Image 1 (cartoon, rainbow, N blue to C red):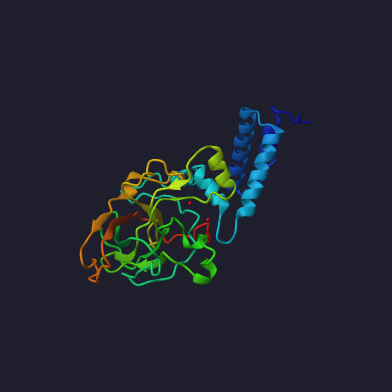
Image 2: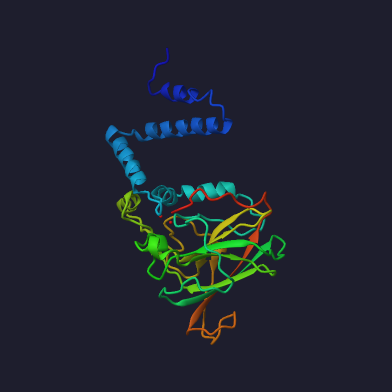
Length: 302
């Protein structure tokens, strides 16, 4: 008869998963039990503290909606999202660095032609984004779909706004690379912004006296058949939060110098509305098994 005390309980629970048919699930659950039980022992967790943890997780789930994913936000601020990303992309072999998907990806984006303005009706400093998708050797990749999305000049994504259901998407689109592997679009200069702090994750951040800010960036999801999918950001050089991103998503290779330009026309030959910014970046893809499965999050909150 086992004694379910502090010394024998853990192995009894681990053994309860011995008959799990899926070997990966079996391994994950056994390791989770060992790590969680070890945490309880090391911290001397109290009943009150555990009840608060359950309440926190309950409220985290209740905060989730079709346009907000509080659990992904929690994963992000605890660094788990970036750790999962890191262990799954250990060998880049010269390919562009990856980072978190973030909770504001909302699934398939509307296809738009190269050079389109994804910021129509949105106030902000104008920006032209000019990018290229190539393989490891630098050869251009044509016909590659690229999803882009970013926050507005006030630091909000379209899906955060009450008008999203009626107004539809803004500052997001899908482009396809041309024969030279290039795609381009017009938009506004994004700014640094706080993650949502009106929920349980925000309470945690404030209780820990951490700031809730993310440095300015544009999201890119590059999904070419025959290559590893690339989920990444391009950050703006000089942003004050590059060294302290609340979700730990910044990598040196992803920081781009954004040029302030006064040219009368933008690179596509069309008239510029005044001073504008130029963002350029080259995405290098690593050979892989093919197009990405749809991300875990089809609708979202980082």
